[in-house]
Length: 121
Length: 121
DNA sequence: GTTCGTAGTAACCAAATGGATAGCAATTCG
DNA sequence: CGAATTGCTATCCATTTGGTTACTACGAAC
Image (cartoon, rainbow over all chains, first blue to last red; front, top):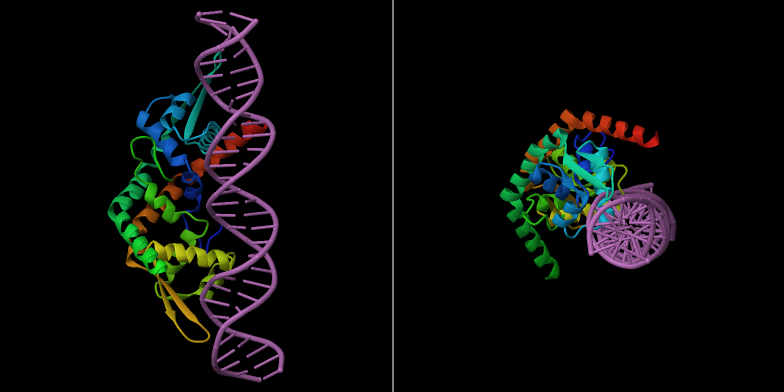
């Protein structure tokens, strides 16, 4: 989501934050837990994410100021992640998304069914 | 955005609707215009989109019930696209996204700058 | 000495996404 | 005859994204 149709479509910046395959999921877990969560714990809670993708997602979120990372040196290593206050401000956005899903998700599904039926006909 | 962390994160369905490289842009143009817009007109208003991607995006939107397509047969062909009422219901969602961008976009940018500065240091 | 646990990274691969270019169908206009 | 118009599709290629597996460092515990 970069440039927009002449006059600016004002949602560009958010899109890049919210949309990776796992971005919302990680934020969701972090938010649900509230406190600090370790890497391994995140892996356990998101069983289908690979370590590579998890660490990549976390670094993105960290760069965008949405999660904080605390590294306690020692052996074995220990790193904790937590949602920042800035991440908290996204709640209305997620709410709007969730509300819409609840209210209109069914219409989308039936539109798809209709379309697919016509296609195969 | 498919499965979610054990308990369901409720924004899955929307994500797939709103996030293609051009999805929001097309919807934006269609909404701004209000009326029916022809394929070529869309191309003109979105100078950087290729015809392949535009037609793909439109078919997606049509399948999801967010745009209607009217084909007037004849030569040369004539096809008009218009946002559906369902697309109108997305307005609060886009508003939430835009509001957040306006309110917190700057914080993200400075978080990024901070992060990048530390990285290169 | 071997194994365990932690938080990753490295190397490599597969699929999806996006983009550039060319062309077609069919009629009208010069 | 040849060009122009319109809404695409076909082909091919580049980039991005996601995924899998293996591996490391380092001390502690067995």
